[in-house]
Length: 282
Image (cartoon, rainbow, N blue to C red; front, top):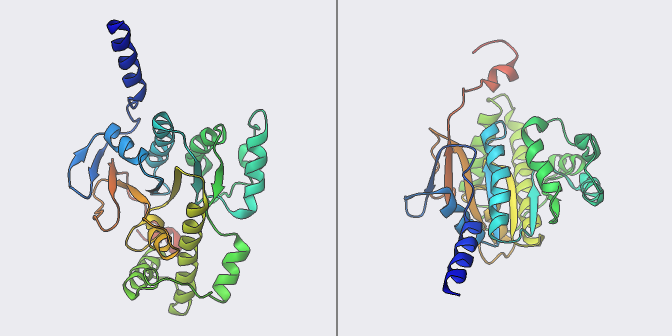
């Protein structure tokens, strides 16, 4: 009997082990500064009711890790829901319909009306895996019509944290940089309003979603100091979601931005500003 119990305990322990991640790198707990193993990270994230993961949109390693995280967390406890910045409310009925099919369609992007702005070759494996699971896959972004209305007339936004001048100044700087200084200053207030309303929508959807809830979004959206965690608190959330930032080596992720950071190998830099200028300068 003692031997049987030992074997059962060994089997249960093995079942809880996390498969090695398919991507290298290093993980830091930003509260303590310590380096931690992937299994330790998953065990800590599995205890949180809400987790948000920030990505670099064009980094293939980040999407590979997202797919791995979905499986690793599900091995620890049942997943309640997955929310994606890449999906809008208009797409939600399509997502729900695909999940009800006995098998996924051959043309999944077409069935979902997937936006070409999100490279399916990067997002496809993660989305396909999620669609095969029993938990809901939920939109966390705004529709294009909503964005146009916000751009024309920014709605009032409640909350002292998300309305802080330091938050808005930081976001304005990021908007200028990401648009290579090409946007007229007259457009900056509208662009800021759209950014913050996206963050607000993500926070609303995350607070409404079945838990444990997991959100995948761009790094700036999930930052604790300027992004949707502030909105979650302004909306009455008791605790901010746990933030895991996926970042390339060489990035500077501070404790104010996230709870954990997973540094992945650096990729060759791309001069998106040269593409936006269209003048061939490097």
